[in-house]
Length: 355
Image (cartoon, rainbow, N blue to C red; front, side, top):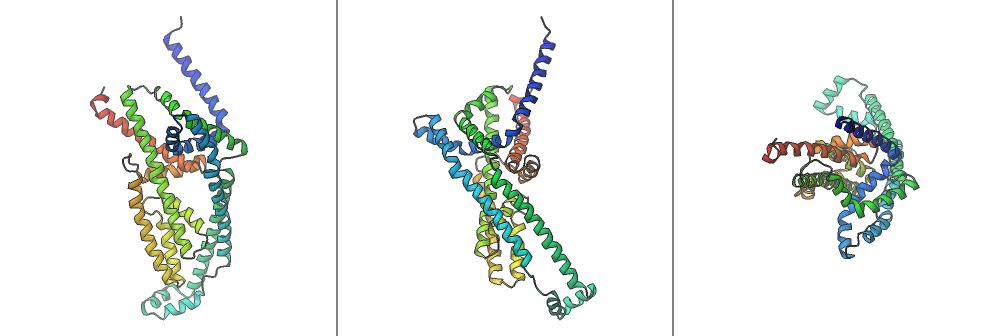
């Protein structure tokens, strides 16, 4: 007979080795697996309703949704990525051709003002040249940023689901996650060393956190980015789709948010003498900022609260670690870690969690 210590060490060692091998085998498929899991989570409410209408035939429902996914989700996303790259190219051309004004003439007018002219005199006669240098740095930096964004957008448009093999793998996994995902999750949760009641509370809590991140933060960012793009299109600003994407990304930044995109637009319109559009954009900025206070609480109602800082850290770290898909996986992982710590703290404080 082998000792209990030896048996446990052998089992743990076997699990570690096999787990490491499994991770190596699945390395090329993490992206399609991630997209399949995200789509399954988002489409599960639709699958649940369709299953009821099909008299509890979950396989039929999963097959229908999987077959329609490329047409209603994947193709629009890829098309959006292509439009984004095209508008980035147009914006780069716009920056190259745009002349922002004769600084010497502007400075001559400003020097005629009593206080402003005296302040400019302190800086000397080379202010216009300094401004031109700053403009050159700004335009050059903006072009490099946009070129990088175009490369990312092109990669996203072509590789949102990877190669053709990865694409069909994603659909294959999506079908089984829709059909058997809940059963798989229940089997995994049974491995958690808790009594059924506490295990159920933990699962419910983690589900609320995941929904709060996806619906309350990601969906809010997408809606705000869309509103910014609409405002830019109405005001006749160049490449509204590009600035809509930038605004959606900026919506994850605490405190600043979409103001990082909208406020410079108001300043630009005012500086170029388009006062009517500047006033419109200022009002539109207030509307978009107010929408954040309305949408986020509405989309996260009756769900666990997740701080904006947690989502921001998750987005930055997720993109750095996993690429574009990390913008969704990162916040969920960080939020789940925080949720587990909070749940553990609550369990310790309650009588049922005390040892």
